[in-house]
Image 1: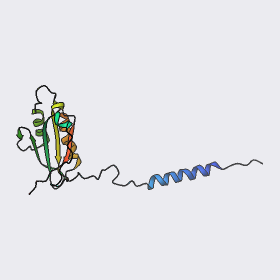
Image 2 (image 1 turned 180 degrees about the horizontal axis):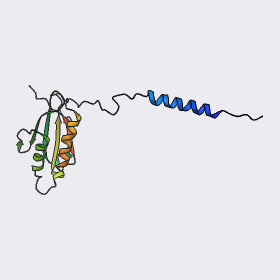
Image 3 (image 1 turned 60 degrees about the vertical axis):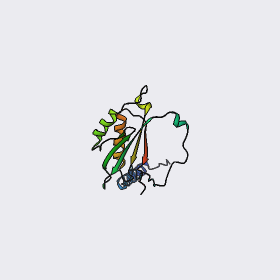
Image 4 (image 1 turned 135 degrees about the vertical axis):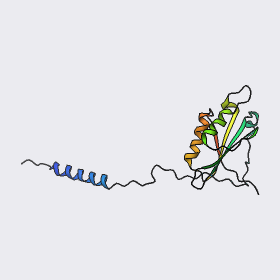
Length: 154
């Protein structure tokens, strides 16, 4: 007498279970999204330790300030450098033009002699922040610093 294991019903049941799990799988809607807020900086916060090694290698420092609108977009862009503040910048192509106009200190390359810092409002969406960072990269600045928008002391 031969004993046979009925394999067809087992395969049928496994395919039914597989189909059930595939059809009932509902991924969470927030997968792949980052729910991160930009850090906030109080007016009372000041840097405590300044590394003296940075003082020897002085770079021209430029600060791009991004204020956000109610929907998280960019409401206002301004740029401040060693020669003063640029007029209000209306959009990112104009920011790119202003960044390309910057000339590095004599005898240095653009990425060696210029420091770019982006100060962003904590309500600004990351898509707009990344867009501004891409403008800096297109203008030839590989290293861009980020910091929260400083609130003015009153």
